[in-house]
Image (tube, rainbow, N blue to C red):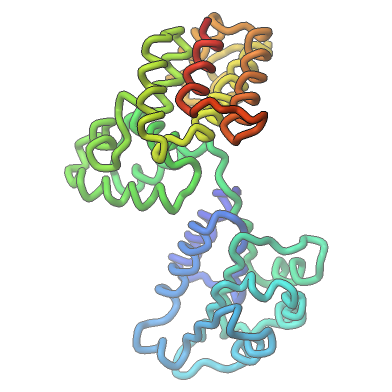
Length: 337
């Protein structure tokens, strides 16, 4: 995701520097909704909206109707706003918008939401929008960038969060920015005193993620070779399988060992380089160095195969009769012995 381009677009909108076309596409619907709502609430005054704002839905409209609406003139206002929601439902006929996009009405602001889909960059429409409007491909944020995103999101409103609390959220919610922001809004209300750092205890008490039994702590236990702690955490996961599905745990462990493998292969093992290549905070680099002393490249290759086998077993492959609890427990014993 090009956050710089997205932030630049948001800044221009806030400064009332509008484009005649905003084509918002991609998998990260958080930014599609954010920019669409910002435009909807910024361009027109409330008293202007009844005559100059039209909301259309992909399933209920046509390309011809959209173009017809766009070609109208505003009434007693500098702009009219046309918002097309769920525009991906028009994807089969979307190229028919190309001619309008090449000659848009400058008094119309067309906001086209194209959720979970993208335009073909080789086609005429993409090039037409690029020429006269704004086209944003809102891609999912890589998971190793989410902790930094959370920290910056909170910092914007003068809140802070501890590293452990931040990673607890990432481990639990992944890179779903809609879910993350919903939880962060809750935490900001609870931690109304901005001098108080959001802590693991805040996460535990208000979101329901245990500060002691989570993916973050499981990886730490494995990395330090603490089998007893790892088994206690895995037992907790098995008792709370809806919150900690085994596939999520296995995926996290897979990524963790891939990172340790990468660390072994680096010629430049400076803190800055390790942090950049592995996509981790500098604070955690020492933990990865410690784990790399416990797990050699050869052992990691075996571990990755074990994790893949467990993933297949957890999905019923090989006619495995083992419970998820037994699968995870056996895996940890194999990894750490």
